[in-house]
Image 1: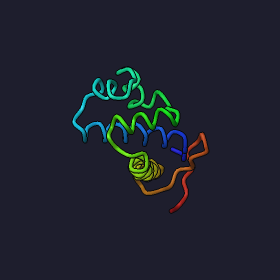
Image 2: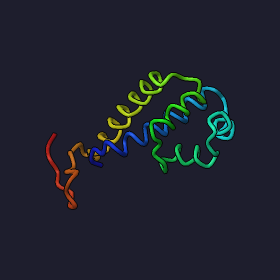
Image 3: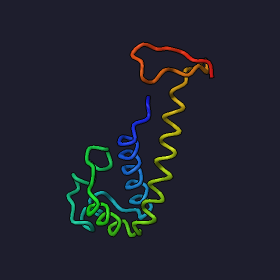
Image 4: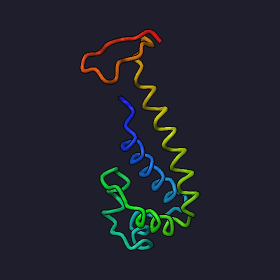
Length: 110
């Protein structure tokens, strides 16, 4: 899988929301009540089906009882971990690097 900054950021945001919500031991429904969002919207965020705007991120932070700075720190760490995980899958089981931009699999020696 090639590096896709938008996708990795969206995945990291979803993971961050899930982690922070679970850390508070609250349900999607409770987070929805605290933020004024619907439970469906929270679910869509957590499944990478929605991209919140900045105002929505700030509302999420309030509902998650975390500062935006702390949220961004967690999000950045999650994004780095996801990128590393996805880059690890660019190698096949023999340790050869696959060409990410090719439709055919081309191998390079690491």
